[in-house]
Image (cartoon, rainbow, N blue to C red; front, top):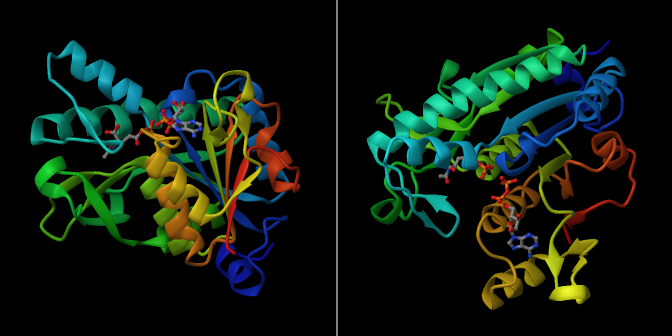
Length: 277
Ligand SMILES: Nc1ncnc2c1ncn2[C@@H]1O[C@H](COP(=O)(O)OP(=O)(O)O)[C@@H](O)[C@H]1O
Ligand SMILES: CC(=O)N[C@@H](CCC(=O)OP(=O)(O)O)C(=O)O
């Protein structure tokens, strides 16, 4: 089989030998059925490479609450002090990262977990609004050869969204932002964002429906009107910044949908697609 690097240079398609990035949200992780990981393992068997970047927002909030540390979000980003960073790193790089690795292994797949600190995989700088949000990072670089090397060895890299800078300072990076940066730096064509809603919803009550695709302008309008809010904001922002680069499309889907990954990769119209216009 061609190495991941060779294949990306030649075609970059998400068929056998191709690679996709999946972002798995904390909102849905605990509810993901075993069949989700069996589907991922089947793709691995077929020679489709995956890189997983995961969140864990609800588990971080739960642990902060237990420790009596207050937490607050600004436009979907957690205000992060050094004290909060300790908990973020413990939960993301420890508990959640290893849970995902074990679930993939239990389904028969091969995975290795790491955080963006390991090998300085995700390099970061303070976010533009750092005065408001503290140690939240923007990604400046991703050492993608670490990921392609792991995939060439037959492993699914499972990445916790912690970043580091040249001085060794760590940063809390929103998992959607980290996944978008990983997708851009790897040069994959597709990113799948797995969450707890069936896509971007528009309307209210019984009129609420999933938008099959959205343009950048529609997204900006929906943020303006408040129809896209909270945790959906970093998702659509990450999608917009990746589709300006190599990534052809970002698909937002519900993780409880049966065999969601293989169905999206096969081109089935599920969830909301954000595509380059
Ligand atoms: N227009 C929208 N359509 C669907 N969900 C939305 C929308 N705007 C905001 N949301 C919220 O975004 C949430 C998903 O973001 P988040 O809770 O951060 O999930 P994750 O942990 O998967 O990143 C949904 O559960 C919903 O509450
Ligand atoms: C800066 C920032 O907000 N970081 C997030 C990182 C985890 C995350 O993004 O998890 P979800 O994907 O489950 O939302 C946080 O502290 O909650």
